[in-house]
Image (cartoon, rainbow, N blue to C red):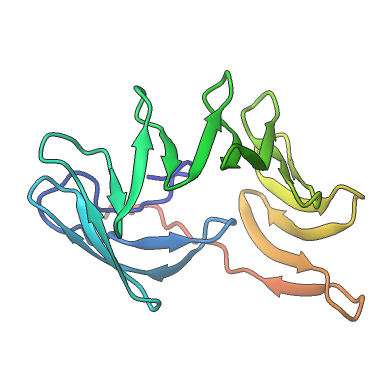
Length: 188
């Protein structure tokens, strides 16, 4: 499961999962499937998408991923990835991603609210992004630092039903979503 309780599949199972490789968008909708290969320990050893195949390397005594397609990864004692190749991932006091650095230079920093929801993404380019959530933690939208919307969502109860995005014409574009329908089990 990911942080939004979406089934991702795979895990540490010895046999392939019917849920392996599910991909979700930011509204929790499944958007595609990916093919993944697993080793006897349940680690994903390769991932094939439309772009190509990426190989994963694991030590025999651990599930920590030290390399992806030959690119080195470093982990801290808690298992967090703290480096990929020349990029460094800095954790804050709450153990959340606080910043990304490359060659010692800040590339991007992040801010969080009291619920540990990421509310600020500040790239070194200066084009900061603010993210808003409602009282129940549902994503409302992403905005530029000036307040201009980048993308907004419309919810019906706990189901996202539409996305609103700005367009080059100045007229917002509306994309509808099909909420996930849950059918309760029925007894005879």
